Length: 164
Ligand SMILES: [Zn+2]
Image (cartoon, rainbow, N blue to C red; front, side, top):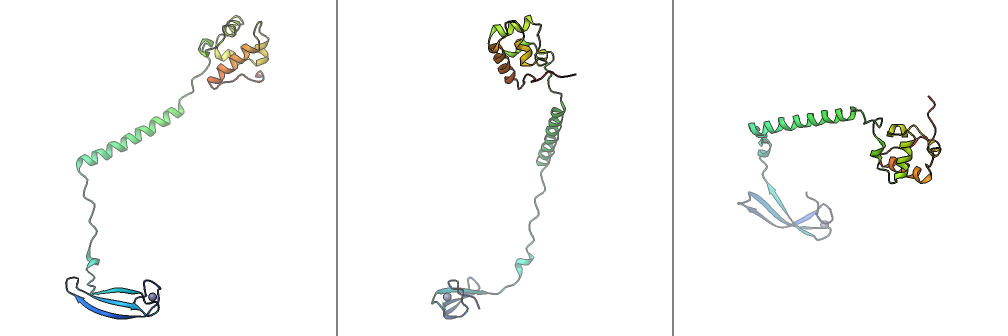
């Protein structure tokens, strides 16, 4: 017994039953005894033939497709290796970078640093803001200039002098 598709109740009355040769099925026009909903059922002989249907095996790859696969794998391997080597590469050191490269906005900051013997970014990074302000004619404006220029490079002056 098939439950009513509308109210799920079991129990219907067959209004009409007809065998349809084209479908090799018997169709029944039914009415639900509970709610009066009308629906059609279909009865068919099951031969189990669908069980013998074997899923089609994937077609073997053509040589070109296999070469593409190998190439893609090699590219992935090379990319992975490149990533590893960039990770282990040492960061560029600021040691020999001249302060000209900082792109200081004021000539005074640059000149006073040069006169004080500060020629490289590394030298600059060994000085605290207080050290810099002790340089003759190097004021807060110059300090701001230096701090901002270093910031552009992701660098900053030490707050305290390294005790080495
Ligand atoms: Zn019903």
